Image 1 (spheres, rainbow, N blue to C red):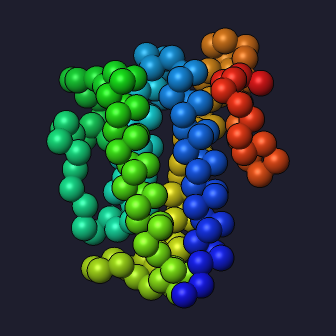
Image 2 (image 1 turned 60 degrees about the vertical axis):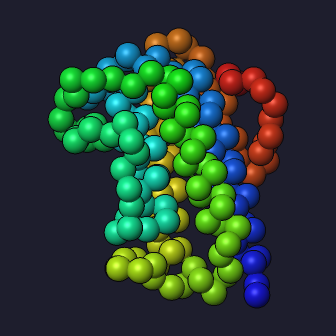
Image 3 (image 1 turned 30 degrees about the vertical axis):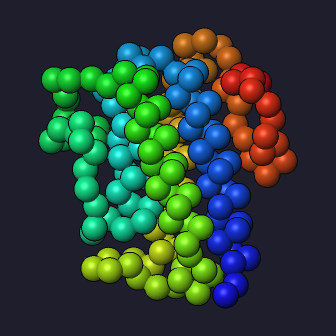
Length: 165
């Protein structure tokens, strides 16, 4: 039961999660990018992670979800607070960490039930999507504040509790 690849995925996922934490605490939720507030960009990103990291075909919407709340093409009548987004994110982290801890390397090549993509494709697709949106949101913060939100990586996985470089 080999887990070398899974352990790397767990490490990279932890880094990705730490970058989202920084983004959640440094962004202006009401700033607008492409006619949508940042909170909606954040929810879109988190919702995609929640749905697509494990198996998009067997997925339950969060209890607070409303139709098109995750869409960046359709405006919403409601909004989400930082606290709501953080709570949702915390739940996603628990779910994904549990999932990853149950996987072996061989399982990465398998397709989850009813899904056309392998587990590895789902994970890599979410890394791409997630970090793209973090970059977009962070660019708004940089433009607005003149400060660069810290981005963790291999060389600075746990750079401390400072949110800005």
